[in-house]
Length: 163
Image 1 (cartoon, rainbow, N blue to C red):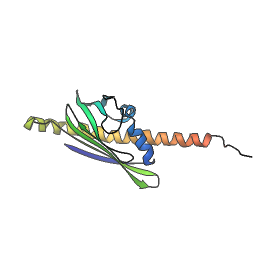
Image 2: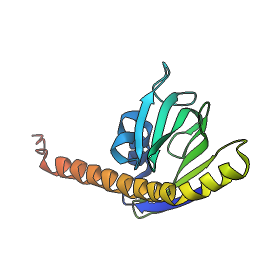
Image 3: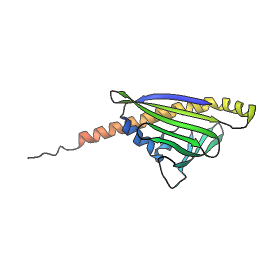
Image 4: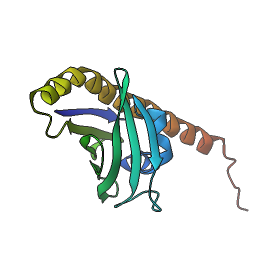
């Protein structure tokens, strides 16, 4: 099953990238995700691995994922190593006027499960689509809030007067 959603965020691409590149942020904005732990010596970047679990109904599904694409300020993609077959991708594209289009693509499946697996995928799709949408909107809220805080801090900074 494939899910693709996007949202425009009123923040520069660099700020959104910095937020997504930090693994500690995922539990703050990823809806339904109950675990996002670094599972390798490398904390982030290409090849970094994470233990990721998502609540779908009464079950927590997921497994070990690895970052397979890492293009600064543009793309982050992962693929499952163990557990549920999944692939995810964050795409960041500038829209102008200080806005960035963020796209979240998520594909999952129960490999080799036949018809019962397909039925499980279809049943889970409504829940997972909701998680994807909420994750995007929570990311938007978090990043835009950080942007406002940074702008307010810059305004409060005393001007350094030079004689």
